[in-house]
Image (cartoon, rainbow over all chains, first blue to last red; front, side, top):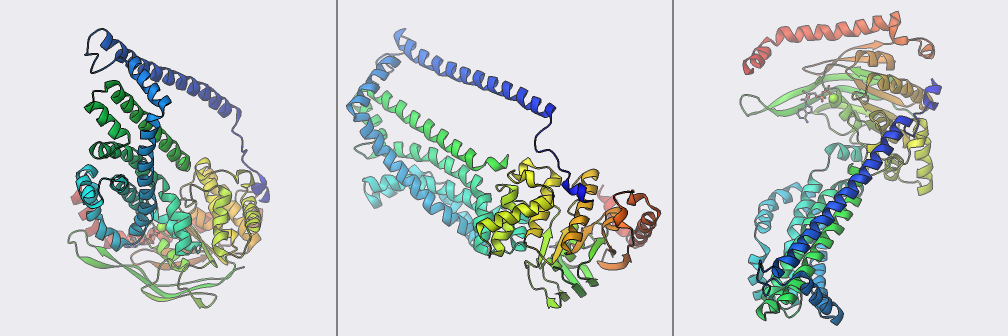
Length: 279
Length: 280
Ligand SMILES: Nc1ncnc2c1ncn2[C@@H]1O[C@H](COP(=O)(O)OP(=O)(O)O)[C@@H](O)[C@H]1O
Ligand SMILES: [Mg+2]
């Protein structure tokens, strides 16, 4: 009977499986190239429309200048350092608010989820806060904290806090009971159980909240900067519009979109990295 | 490396809500259950689904406390989970974000007293015991169902428990994998000498594995009869033990016991059936 123990299944897939995988690999690669090609074509079309529509007089070139004018202005702002001044102001504010939200919401959410009575007590209150638009609260923050950096960081913190908090609560609360039973059988202490079983199991869910917050951080900040600020992309967009610096306004808008896309891609990649075992 | 387990007049009730009225009612899952598992013995418990097998195992594992009665391991009352008793569940319970190796190490991290290096060596040793050395670095989603259960068995054995409790561990596997794992389990049991309590609803599995088979009856859960099995396991490799006459006789005997129960239940339970039909 011991030969049954020594007899092992091959770790490598058999030939046919390998071939299948290889065939699939090729088609996947080609599919990816096609997808990328189409995406680029889409972007190019948008650029082309933006460039030609004002030139052909389809739209007023004063209000929507051709793309190359916008890009020229953008480049001037980059080289003069003006753009960076605004971008860095916005990035610092959103990063601080976002970071604070992560640091505060994850432990709090974990604690709330871990103690059932606390969870049941706080859920309705949290739902109310979550469904109160951050910008609706902005006047309150300005009243309390003035129009300086603090109120802007606070509004980002507020916007980021609830998605992370609620996803942490749901991630921790929905850990497979069978895994918890296993932890008990293996003699894991409550702290070890949390650290080695509950938290890792909740990470993918928590990350969904973090990704949502990343988008919210920028969105809310831009709006807040339009109301009261002397630097930042939101301020720049608003200021340019008031002073009829139309190309500058579009340059700032493009920059905002690019940052949004970048942040989202970065967070999605991180989320994938942390959820690989879910496959 | 093995303990004697004793259950004396164990009763377990649950509060359940009635189907018609929403009132809480007491449901007797186990009633006056007596059972002794000798040190080093391989005991299987067989019974129809819902008769209280898992409840018995949860009690021995210390995951639940009985309503009344006494449970002891080597004379010491069981009050909670302990590293002297290990459980393999039917559902796969590996941590999906850990490799097979790291899953086995989890059991050793909790028991403490080992360095990182020793844990890793021990985990390898036990993965080797279940024939999975080549798969140490794989994640659960890269393993078949049978492999996952083998990792779970390695994890349960790695901290060298006195008693191994198994709740239908092969229930979700295909017939061939199951038979192979049964043979491997017997071989591991012979080498480690651990007491094994193995739960199943499959009569063949109970007869093949057990030195004794405890047949359970339902409503309320009790041990109806304990059947001693004497099969020449040493020759199992050469001939098909499962088609021998002795095996067939044991199977028939246990089948009849379970059948009697079922007939008894049907006669007493006509009302239940009527109600079920009226729902359709
Ligand atoms: N926590 C519980 N609450 C209420 N009823 C339970 C609970 N656990 C088990 N039961 C009931 O006790 C009976 C025995 O369950 P179980 O031990 O899981 O049976 P088996 O493992 O033999 O299929 C079943 O009728 C089940 O519904
Ligand atoms: Mg069960």
